Image (cartoon, rainbow, N blue to C red; front, side, top):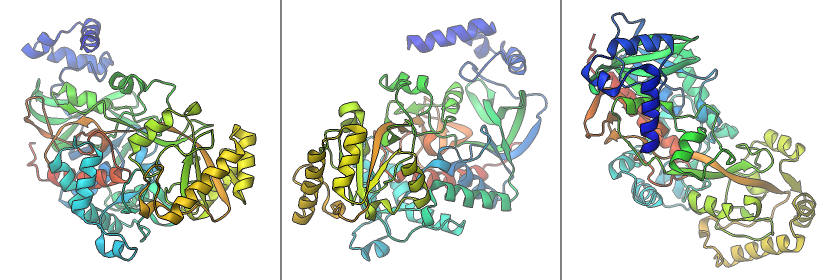
Length: 514
């Protein structure tokens, strides 16, 4: 609190304005002037009143071009609204474009073909439990009940998925569907972008949200936004609503370490550099409530050598095992993401070796695998003994311990039970088909489960008095309340698509105010 108060005091001193000035209305003209001169930045603006003249107008203004933003745009347009999207980066997609694109949903008829029993209810219960029951049941239920419909909607937009479900890392159940042909998240973004283009929905690039415009300080409707384009502030009128679909804050070291002091600059992140969370602060300036900001997930998905997301040859957990630099298993490969990340942080050099055979590695993009191997960012050998020698040479892993760990794991597969760590029987598959792979991997800051509070399943932003902030919506990782303390692997895509669509539909239903 003291730190926050100091920041506000510093901001007031620089602008010459106090919170009392804003509340009494004497600071309104000064705010407009300060915005024009660039004297105020997001996080220091108490309120921005409507201008005498708006620069641009749309019905629904959407901030962000990830899964949530593009889904919202398509649905709002199809519901009869004029839509404009802004994106602060030079390319669209944000984290969605580099994500795995894994989509979790219960599809019992398809899963039954592979001996998998599932239901939306089971998906719901497992998601709640995985988040330590800190997710809002209403939101979780809505997401899991509409997960299959969301995937079918994506397919109508042109996204193809592999038919066979599997258990993605941290997914907890074999209900994960990958975009076909190793398409990953980029395939989903490309398909949605094509639909946006088909509808002639404009996307304004290199345009950054600076502030929201509201009728009065902490009161009334959201009327639009102030955005910055080529160094100039532009007042953008939103006649129906503004939708925040800007993602989380995993790449903002100051913001994430404020809520979890361990997540300093030396901890890598899987996120794009633009995942900085300023729209959360901007929404708070208009009274928005937030929740679960210290629920920050780490994912074992950063390459040990580059400290960056990806450059790994293995994605599955079935024909795979995790060993440390001593060559010994230390955790069940299908555990919750937070459990696995915490286990990795306790290992020598905070590293795991993701060991897999061809049956697991073949899910990954073959071209990328060859590049990763060529660059010595991961290793491959025809036999386990050869792989052990490589790991000993590269990372001083004891050869004997490594080979024995794989043999012990394969023996547990034959016995149908992992007595060491309790890996689920359906994921307990042998590492036996060469060639064999090992990816030196570390945990990186991956997903921020906390964010802007929204009302039930409407995606309407609510304030600290639990009242709706009229005409302001949010969807995707920018929000809180869906995943609780820990996000299930493969649930992020579902969250973004299901609630992104809903935000677009509900925003389009608003009556235009001018």
